[in-house]
Each structure stands twice: as structure tokens, then as C-alpha cells.
Image 1 (cartoon, rainbow, N blue to C red):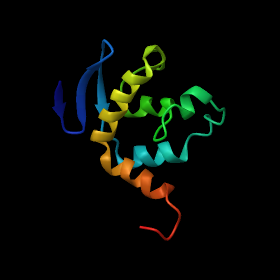
Image 2 (image 1 turned 45 degrees about the vertical axis):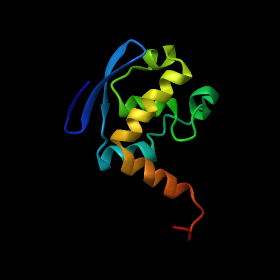
Image 3 (image 1 turned 180 degrees about the horizontal axis):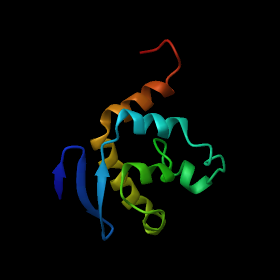
Image 4 (image 1 turned 30 degrees about the vertical axis):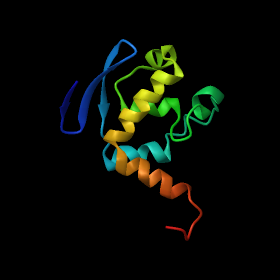
Length: 103
């Protein structure tokens, strides 16, 4: 594993790839979406509570084909690495999911 500012190279499920710390602009774009992701992917959108599988493509250099080949337990490892590199944004997501008026 190697790490430089905002990037960390990891190996999971036989794939070596980079986990990225997203910029504020990248997270904003992810939240707002591009209008192309209106189709629901039940397995991909609901496998994990915190993230859709398609969003892993923004946080990593994994391809859609690589993500599709991984087991849920392996994807959970990827998610853990993404959360570690982007803890502020995942914490923001938790705050956004709470009812308003509660810190």
C-alpha cells in the first residue's frame, strides 16, 4: 500500500487500485448527480446503506466491471477504505440523514 496526499493505493480481491479523497466540488457533483442515474439498480443501490455501488467509481479507480466481480465482503473492504479517506464527507452524509433540528 502506498499513500500520497489524497490518494491511497490498495489491493483488494486481486485488484490494485487507488482510493481517492474527493474534493468538495467532486462530492457536490456526486450529491447533485448528473441526471443520468435515475434508473434504480436494486442490488447496486441498496447493498450498502452509506453508498451506491456506482458511487464507488468516483471514490476509486475501479471500473464497473471490477466492482461487478467483487463479493459483498470485498466491496465492504473497499467501502471501509473510502470512508477512511473521506471521513468528513461520510460524516456529513450521516448528519444529512438525521431529522432536521437534531445535531
